[in-house]
Length: 167
Image (cartoon, rainbow, N blue to C red; front, side):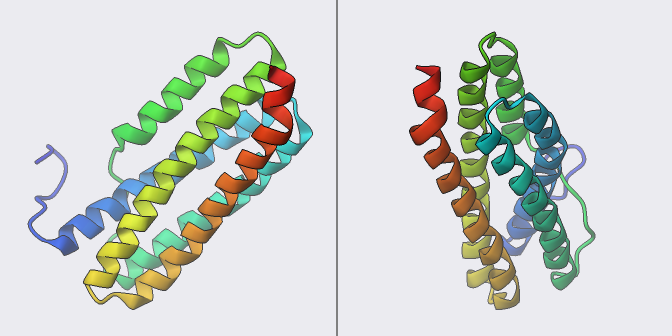
């Protein structure tokens, strides 16, 4: 058990912990996206980042609803996974002198973030179903659909535009 976390003794405890994890992650993502928007040289990529920033703000609000539905205080717990993905992205992007290569690096990092989010939301949905929390399932599924769409959009931008230019 971590120093500032509650013991995880049940699936419900694990659900809440995972909810706290992704809440922290979404807030970290929301604070990182403005820098990515600023650094992107490709307009389509900038638009995708802008759009996802607005979606991410909505994800945070939905998570707050899930906390309320679960009768839990809204809080995040440190998420070393998302911190690691973001820190690695900052390092790689900072090492790119060429703007088209930097765009490709940011796309790669953004997709790593999307994949992390998709696994977390998929897990939360599975837990909520098992716990009979269909109210939470529908809210979480709405976000998962948006995360998958964002990943697909980033894949399209990468394969049809940015990665070609970077090559």
